[in-house]
Image (cartoon, rainbow, N blue to C red):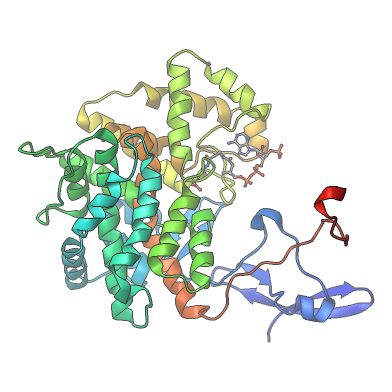
Length: 426
Ligand code: CMC
């Protein structure tokens, strides 16, 4: 029997069904609330709103649990690769050897951009932010793949997903090369997904960049840990845009824009800026914490809407950052400063009471710095990683909610009614 919650309003009792997830999550189904009670829900920031059912990623923020399609993130991080994770998120199961080989070959086949796309980069100023270029050029892919603007079959979806996952890496690397005034390096189909990205970033004509296996592995881990995180701001954006039946290229391009903000994917660059200020003697860790407590500043890489405990991705990234620096024989002062700041915050009542812990962005920048990725590329790296998640969510929306456009309501607080005033009488 379906459980219900009862709402009593103005003498009328309304039964509202309870929706349950596989992990015991419960929600009140309010789809009939307005028609039966004349009410809508008010939930700024969607703190208590579940706009969809989703079978992709499970997060238990109280206990620091993250699972992709049921698989614990630590197992995936230790044993999987980014391309395998992309397949898992998008298609729901771990790929067989044959599926993974075909998927990887498909990504290689799609790695080039149409030659005309290269000219788009010429239109950007040299100091243009690579996130702006990434979003614009991913959207422009729709101009080159008209046949994939309407997705009717699984085969078309597979092709569009492969194109985006492969080309986003080429576009990202080209954005960086453009910002540095360096020639574009074409992708090399003989290289793995991550090695190929590092090649496009750092090889120069007649001088091939050959990253260490540790660097390639660290990049794969970084991307894997960013691959999905259920209904966050950018993913919700992708789902919302997709709900209007906008095409996949346009929808994920909107996701890139949403990710750019400092409270979301822009936080990793914010963490590095904050740690550099401490390193350069502009502020002490204590002063940074005080500013955060006085609400003059957000401690970047700290706090999370869902996690009220240590973000499991931050646990893995912190350890991985240590290991990478050790294996590459590098030292990074920012790592030590970060740990000092973390320890001071975690023993401060302000952060304890509010359950503010390091999130995915706190240590990820240390890994990116060790890979020589410049700071303006940090959110771009997040976007490459999040692409499989966005695509998986877009498809889930496409399949399950095809005809339901996302269209929230509001509580109108403006003027009730006024007569138009001619301009000379104002
Ligand atoms: N530094 C100082 N105070 C904070 C912080 C922080 N980083 N985060 C939250 N608080 C305080 C906030 O001021 C509020 O205090 P009070 O109860 O006195 O008003 C309380 O903690 C709850 O904060 P909130 O803003 O209501 O929480 P939220 O769920 O709306 O925000 C957040 C989540 C991630 C936007 C926020 O924690 C934040 O701004 N963190 C810094 C930016 C950051 O690291 N973003 C990356 C998030 S994880 C990856 C991603 O999504 O991209």
